[in-house]
Length: 461
Image (cartoon, rainbow, N blue to C red; front, side, top):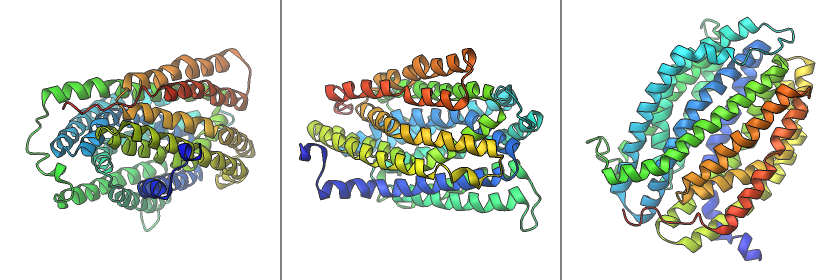
């Protein structure tokens, strides 16, 4: 029983060799996001609400990129496990084509409809704030961020391909350089330091866009200067050709993930729009809670990547039983870690809101929301790694049902009913929405026990 759930030293060395660079990058990214949030928070409740809403709107694009490329990455990881570098090259090309097309479409949609999207979140009580100011700031922030959509998509194509080959340090270094750039430019442009004009919220957006182009430059130079180490990048731009059979197979696998991420992100956006009916203070508190949540969840996000890579490579090498064993141990490790992280989040709850220049009501609301989030964290971490387990074997239709369909049929519906037809305050509504995922945990347990997900999708390619 001990060996079934807990690996040996060699297992954990391989896990943490993969995890640590991803964790470092994500931790620094989310820590700087927290600092960025704190800097904007010094401008007042309207500013922090504006950036929160704009980023919520942009999340739909970010997760669409993630979903589409994740479907292609299933093939990339298994091609690498199989030793097929031409297959890796085809999967990279497919990511680039998808990323460019999705970026162009998103820019057009946000350019013409961005203000309407932001305004849809500002229909609740003002709680003494200025809703018109929040709308102006949010729309301005969103318009600047459009310049960062294409580099974001291209970086994801390169970084995910590198990670499929087990290279996690290079994306980490590029990410850290971008983060440092973003943090420095935030300080300069938000507050008008070193002779720069005071740009406030728009300064934060400009800093983010510049940092994304910096990250793109670093990761592409690294990838193409080491063609001997990454042969799948050699000749990647010689043509746009991808075999029709592979395009068809990848499309059938990636489409459910793409639709899943779009629907899931739209669902989360709608939930936050429902929450906004409880007023400007609730939106500010939820923004602070969400930023802190991302910081405490860096290991959870990294464990999802570990499952994709370690399990996917073994499936591609047709080591199905070993893939099941590795996955079981990764899930057990995830849960142990996140019980401890949930406790840490609860202990930090009274201190995080004090970093912001917001009223006592918002601080108290944030503290209570963070406690709820800490208690629910082990539930969400289990659902997260279950999703990546099922996805690693190409069962993307099942992941669509498990994630997006569940979100709309259960979570979104519950949030809608509670916000529209009850007088419950935001904390009680948040508790119900967070803990409804206990049902998802039970469904995940049943699916994991069946072992239906463990399959090789590149055997005959």
